Length: 166
Image (cartoon, rainbow, N blue to C red):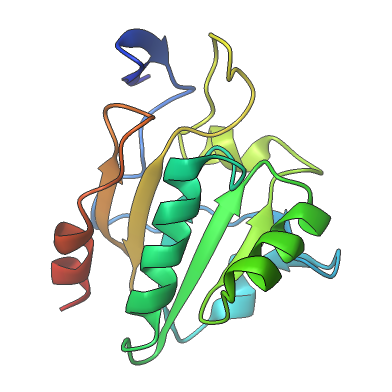
């Protein structure tokens, strides 16, 4: 279990992020067209798992916009924004913001992702959704980099993520 804060108040997560060098757990999430997606759907590509509580917040929206910009210049890399938002809301966000270099996925059908990746918030006003985190996986789904953002209301260290992508 890890601890993050929300406006300075400590909140526990369901576990710890997968360790660097480990195989990333599989997942079943929902895309904007209500299709179920798994890690295998992105086989052979590097993956950035951009995990946010909700795209309906300024910090999460800013994070998605930044990764959308960065994704345009990344070879063989799929950026996935994973949130608790309904797929309809994710689609509306992407259309409104002209987001077209990344894919959004929702935890709406299952809380398993949050538990498997150690990012489910277990208490506080956001209990049941995911903490802010970023992970980089290689083409074989091996974890290359992890970042659990200590304060939910702050953006991640983008430069560290980009450096991990080399």
